[in-house]
Length: 393
Ligand SMILES: Cc1cc2nc3c(=O)[nH]c(=O)nc-3n(C[C@H](O)[C@H](O)[C@H](O)COP(=O)(O)O)c2cc1C
Ligand SMILES: CCCCC(=O)C(=O)O
Image (cartoon, rainbow, N blue to C red; front, side, top):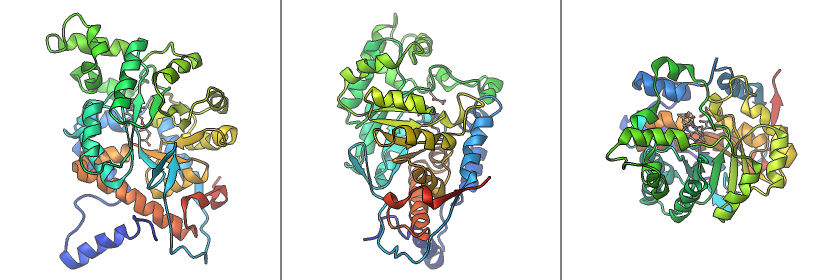
């Protein structure tokens, strides 16, 4: 049986030919970005599209993909194909997830609820951010309304105060999230000139703090309820959302809090990957946060092979930062990623078309990946390896 994503594009051609019906949003990745960018108000636009400092690392993420080129093989019977892959003990329809992105209601009022629904419709797991505009419980419910089987993961910003960390993790486990993704690269927000220029930070408008306002431990630290004094709650959030004192030794505490797989997001150095493996974590995400944190940092794809070589056999290595099309997913898989997370393109789909836009972006990525696989002479994702690529100087 061929992949469930095969021939997605023929459906679009047919709709156009038979019914004169064109897709409601752009089908080219650059056009999608351009349309979303045009629609957004300056504050959210800068927040979504911007990076740290000179944005050198944000560009390096894209350039790293352009340096890798696929060398297709021929005459290999690619009629029967599969994108399916088991990731952290769960069978996924494809090695693809939606990266954790906070404050999604700044681009569309339905925010994470629309992403949860759009992702569930394709079977692709969403990683819900701690800094979401809706509570983690509401996001879980939105994601199960249509397709009960789609897994979801929870991304933790490790806060100041272990009891708050425990509370968030226990809530996520109770709400059916299947893994805890701890983000390591954002103990402090990076230097982001586009946001500084506009004095724009969504949290100051109370966006992205729903999980805190609904948390009994967080609420117990406030003198007045958030309903009585919203700005005091925002101030408290800014003070506790992330905890730069956390070290490797603290991971043992997290392990005590949950039996779910633990994934560390933001690993770039092979020695950190080895340390993570030695501490018994289940997975890593090679990521530089989309170039939003350390300007001048290595392009994420350039860091991937070193991390895979260091620990690929012991720990599942996932990837994000700079994925813009099906070929990019293929390239990251070829360099050893077990699965790939897509970030900004999903937000552009959300901006342009809400739930439908998210669904279209994910379906398009899957269809493109399937076609890239087949046209490269491969029948399933396990056959993608480094021999499929050549490096352009
Ligand atoms: C607007 C925005 C918000 C983000 N919020 C979070 C977040 O709350 N938690 C997190 O771990 N990463 C967050 N990230 C980083 C993404 O998970 C991911 O690493 C990044 O988007 C990858 O870069 P790309 O989208 O350019 O491919 C955010 C990224 C963007 C663009
Ligand atoms: C509290 C920070 C959440 C958003 C984030 O991670 C980003 O803007 O990159």
